[in-house]
Image (tube, rainbow, N blue to C red; front, side, top):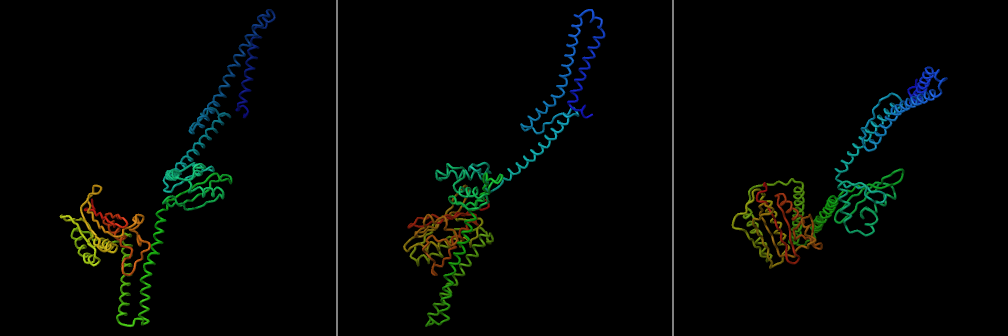
Length: 473
């Protein structure tokens, strides 16, 4: 039964049927015209010709029919295979028989279904990975063994383009698309075939780089680099180290003086009550200095943590500026410094401000100005209303004629313990803690204001404060 279901069985069956038909027709003609055959040889020839023509036509018809039945499904499968090769994975072949061609069509459809499922899963996974790749905040770039970029997320492509636009050596531009800061690490990864990490410095930025090799059959065919901008983290770490060092330095001087003068009192080195009183006074002054330093540190920590208590109320800055001017007028005269104030005729009122905190700001600025201004010089305080970016502000300026601040130091003067003059050290008489301008900046920013400094060495420094008249707008 199996052989008759096959294509070969059908072919043999057709051939047998054709031979039987031809023999049957030939026999009928022979039986019908047997007598003619003996009387007329021409009629016999004609009979054979007709029989051959009829047999040929029948054979051709059955051969064409059989060929159509066999080749049509195969042509359909070929067409379906071409469509699948072009990406039409849902193409299917109709099953019209139960023989081997039908089984082949069924197997072909199953294969196409499995291929469709596999391709769909692969596309889904690819889209998922692409989405993750695009959403990564880090820069991800894949290089091949020749150093060419084969894959990069948007951040990675922007970073590579920006780095390649910088002025590197001509050799690094020619050899590959790997930027100069990554080239040594990339070459080492290809050579050693293991994950490596490093930090690279490009201009003023710091980047943490993790690079892993791409392997295929124990052969390194490229590398994947993940780059993260750690500039802020590096700055914060440096600030933390500097802060600890500066605090230690600032506390060391008063502590040493406290220890030394205390030992002098205990050893009865002071010969007279006046000397003992002087030693006790120095100890008292140093303790006050340490107290101010600790207080400023705590205030600054609370401000930066957002825990500073603000008593916001309507404040007339004209009254506040006049009060601060009167407070420093006597100190300025003692230093032979002329302290001027320039105010408009109308009141400068701010809707929401902490008057005590603003007085602390002005006190710090004027103390610094008097400390760094020579005798017979001028300090000027002025205030007016100003419109900045379509918003109404009160602009306060404190201008002195001191030694000034170098341009390279101006961006850092609001940092804690920063000293524009690296050779200058604070003595006990100065009373400074190195935190005044950092506190000033935090107070101004807590009022949603701005502060900036302009200075020329040998000419003087001007601090400009901008306080919004109505911070709710």
